[in-house]
Structures are given as structure tokens and as C-alpha cells.
Figure 1 (spheres, rainbow, N blue to C red):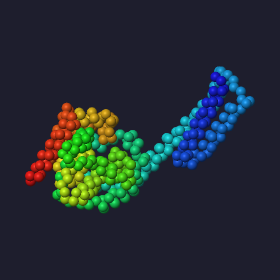
Figure 2: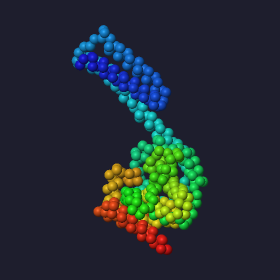
Figure 3: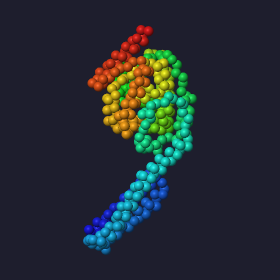
Length: 352
């Protein structure tokens, strides 16, 4: 092998190391990247000058001479890989463990809610850990809940407008079917998850997804956030309509059946409709997007069966209407059935 290519490899790995240090420094990863960046840049500059010097000569190497000469680019490759590890590996690990310590030192007090089945509590540790490092601090979460609970009004019943609450296990089509049925009825449609994200827009959870908020505050406080968001929504809607009859269709999250405080308020303010899809259909839809955190990664099908049985019984017990959704029923057909169900309930309430 010619020493020309060996020198070129050395310059290339030195340049990559300098570039890594540069992006780490100006990406605010720490001022300790200054010296490695300067050193790597100077060495790169010197090697380039030597490489382009008129007196530079290159020879063909074989055997032990080649192995000895290749030690330099191999060492520089190791240096480059080490800089990548320092930039992307150790920094993230530091943030992760710092967040863990903070969460252990300050455990927020939460209101008591009913226990949930073991299958609903299981979550892959690796998936949770990926989101843990950027979670809001316990102090910020406590301050947020203290503030919003003080500002949340008491809901006055009965409401001036009829409310239809669409419930069901995850991926049964609550939002899709509920939205289309609302269009057919001429009713307004809302989604509780979307309302929660809007409500949290100027909070410690700004920019986070529903799943990230759930992981940040835990199941109990997530249920409390659902309740607060719903109460705020009812109060605002009543103030906007000012006594006018403007029916509403509201799709709720898949685990709302375990939130007894919210379920009680739903039962006092509207009609609960359970979209009951077959277990196999729901499991197939869920698996398409990967195993979610509420299922056991080792036994996803068994844990989903346990969760389905539990939540199906809860929804059957708390809902006013059960609407079965067969495997062969399409979105449009299901939407028409839901429209007819809501029209029937709305007509009965007018007659009363």
C-alpha cells in the first residue's frame, strides 16, 4: 500500500475528530470541547501542509512496514470514535441519571384513585428510559397542578347542550368514527387528548405528546389532568354557548374507564356510548405500531387479553349505550350507526 493513502486516511480521521469537537462546542455540549477542537484542528492543518509540501515523497509499503505505518490512521480512527462516544453517549447518560436522582428525591403527592390491573401498569423499561431525561422537574409539575386546580371551576349541571361521550379501548375508532358521526348529525366534535395538549400549551409539558406527558407525571396525575381539562372545557363551552343548545360529541382516551372521578362527571353531564370492537381486531391494530408501554413486551397478547377483559367490563358497567363494531363493519357504516344512536338519544331528550 502506498504511504500517500495512509497519510490521506490520517488527515481524514483528524478532520472528522475536529468537526465532531466543533459541533459539540457550538452545540453547547460543554466548554471542555475547546482544547480537543483546537488540538485536532492544528494537527489537521500541520498534516495537510506536510502532505502538500514539495519535498513530500510517497513509497510503496508491504509486510511489517505496512502494519507499523498503519498504526497512525488506526489510532486517529480510535480518537474519532472516542469523540463521538463522548458527545452522544456519556452526555445523554449523565442527563438520564441526573433526572432519575431528581425524581427519587422529590416524589409528588397525588390524589388517590382506584387501583388498575397489573397488565395496564407494565411498561418496557427501555422505552420509558428514552423519554425520562427530558421530563419536567417535580417542582414544576407540583406548581402547575397547584395553580390549575385552584383555577378550575365547579361544573354546574344540568348543561344547556347535550353531550355525547364516545368511549372505548384504544384503536377502536373513537376519534375517526366520532368525528364523522358528528358531521352527519351537525354536532360539534372534540377530542379530549387534543384538548389536553391545548390546555398544556403554556405549561411544563409544552411541546410534549400525550404519551410523553403520561410518562412524565404518571398514571394518577394523568387522570387528574384529564379531569381538570374536561372541567375547564365544560366551563368554557357553557360560557360560549350562553344557554343555546349546541350538541357536542367528545372522544375520550382508551383508559378513561379507570378514572372514576371523570366517569362520574361524564355520567352527570351527558350520554356515554361504548364502541365495542372485537379483541382480536384491536390487538392487530395495536401491534402494527409496535408494542405500547401498557403491554408486557414478553407476553403482549396475554397482557392485552387481560387488559381487554378488565376494561370491557368497566365500559359495560359505566356506559349508557353499547355499540358493537364487527370485523367487517367499515368506518362509514359505523359512523351512520353512531349518528342514528345519537339522534335517537337526542330526540328522546327533547321529548322529555
